Length: 212
Image (tube, rainbow, N blue to C red; front, top):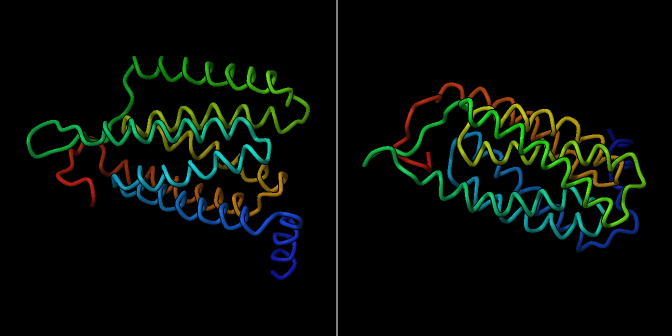
């Protein structure tokens, strides 16, 4: 266990205390955001906004442009999702968790391809297409784009894309030297599995409160 801890700490050699503290804060709020999402609690959005705003800055410094852009996208989608989740189906109930319909499935395919293409163009524009991590980052970015869009629309399939992308992200962040963030994605994977199960139980059941 000590060897693992020493290896984790060694990844931050030469990194400023300020950046380590920022990453830790971002991870805490990111974890809270996923936890609240699992609970179908609207606090998923304010906690997510704090986390993603910090990560945009950190990921820019570390050159992970795809993940930087997706966190900026998360930030904007959190505002959009916050609005959607407050919509009501009647005077007493908010919109329920649902499955995607045929139209949304087609939109999902389009969004995934568009996100892949956009991310590739960004890497080319910034001349960052020099490492194998760029290919992985492009894939996870597209998966996360899709997952966030579906979560904002309260579609249960969002968890499937989170799980796949989280699993892929774990070794990527360890490789990049962001050990705390990598551990965060391990926890995210576990929470996403439980989140899918929890949302499945509440499928098509409108809620009276968004803070439960």
